[in-house]
Image 1: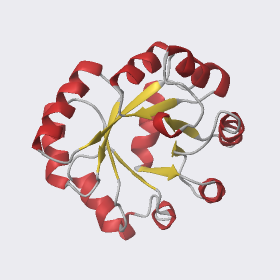
Image 2: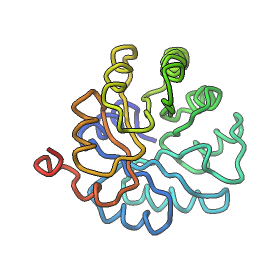
Image 3: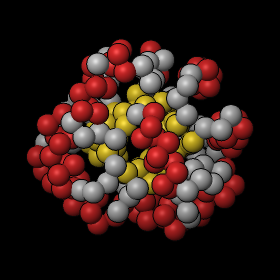
Amino acid sequence: MIQVNEALRTIGQEKMIASIKSPKQLEKFLQSDVTTTFLMMGTLSTLDRYVAHLKQENRTVFLHAERINGISLDRDGIDYLAKRVGADGIVTTKASVIQHAKRAGLMTVQRLFLVDSDAISSGIKMAKDQQPDALELMPGLIPSVIEHVAEHVSLPIVTGGMIRKPIHVHEALSHGAFAVSTGDERLWASQGMKEEII
């Protein structure tokens, strides 16, 4: 398992995280230069194979906890993801999962759905209370909210959801996002090509 600072440094250098929702996307991800994924698929019977394949290719794997079929997100379930499956980290909306994951030695990304001002306030409070390694703000097309959250928390911020164009990536990064997560494979190809993003 890689250290948190090393993983965040890697994510920060590349600025792109591939959100993988299907086996077909997994293969496209392995053909790209992106090295970090939020794996949003899998079941108890397939997850270890997906993660082993990705790790064999030197990829950093965060599992989206709520998208894994057949696993309980209690302490034992999170220990299984850390020790048996070999994930580097998890993405979750649940405070209890963050605490279990931290105890298991996993990196943690807290996903926040920012639908109104109350959700923003409660998300900031939860982030301060839980101290995940990073936040993922959804949807990603909210530059002014990215700035607002960045002023209130000292955590790396990832944005995701509805990121469809290079300009969306640029706007998120220029307003304080540490990295952008997207399932749009066309944007994975623009990894590192600043002229395309700008």
